[in-house]
Length: 107
Image 1: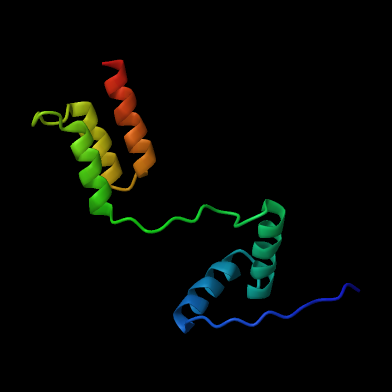
Image 2 (image 1 turned 120 degrees about the horizontal axis):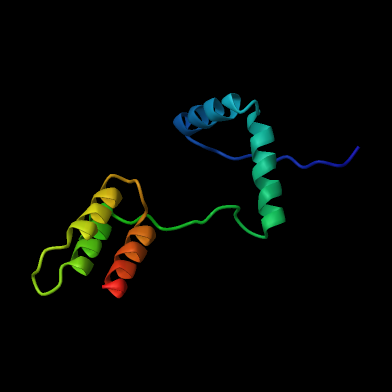
């Protein structure tokens, strides 16, 4: 049998409960889920997901709106649709920015 190591960590009770509920739905124990995370990190050569600093939603929305407001002229209907999709959370900031930039390049 392979030698194993023990990892101890502290988390808030709320986070532990939320995570355990998710793992349970997936048929995993917390130990199995942590092992999956560590294995994926090792295989990936880093975190197995993108890690970003949180950005205020209003900042991104203001940035997108300012991109499409040129010389005080309101955004086109197409641009407004993209802004609405972003503000509802249906698309992320990068997708909204790409769509708007592409729309203006085609015009």
